[in-house]
Image (tube, rainbow, N blue to C red; front, side, top):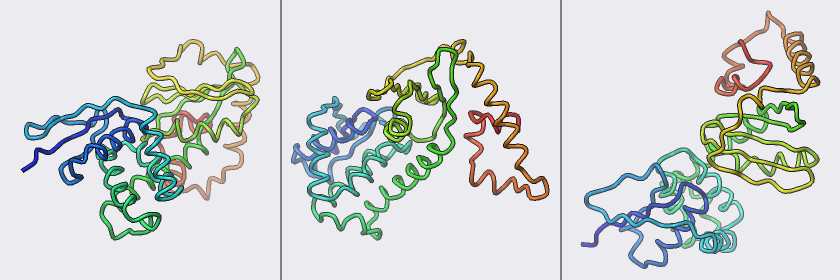
Length: 256
């Protein structure tokens, strides 16, 4: 009987796709292999651990194959699934792609298949939070003119929302900081964006806001409180539509 192989990769979309490439090219047999990502990897006494370095060329080939042999929607699912905080996400992507490369575009509708439904659940969870994040992120203008926002999403959202905010604020210098992962997405005026890891912002600088920002926050809080109707308050509905985990970075909700 073959020894089970576990491919351990970086916790990133590129890392997972690289591991998928290695698993396919090994010809060892899908049933004897699995993939684990980054901090979620657990050593096993009865498995062979193979550590995979991220290879952008290999990852790109797998990404191209997903789009051409399965569909754009399948690529959308894989991209979101790889950003989930679930410890099983890397293997979920692998199992989905095994079926996808065999059956083509129809695989995205095979909800009775456990491997497909496994990725669908991750995809939906990440996408649902992505929509929340795009609506609840609050920028503030620092004293030096840079627009700064911080948030702490459950899933890895920076790579997913960066393009949205780049299109929305193309003429601004802005930074979005992920407090949970210590990553920052940086955008320069009329330029592209990039993500830096192990970033720790200077707390003194991010607390120094412009005079216009200070006035705007005061007006915004006043407006938010003024349009509320006390008799129609529904705390449970508000927390359903605006999850409490986002409140601490939203000026209008501070102190509530």
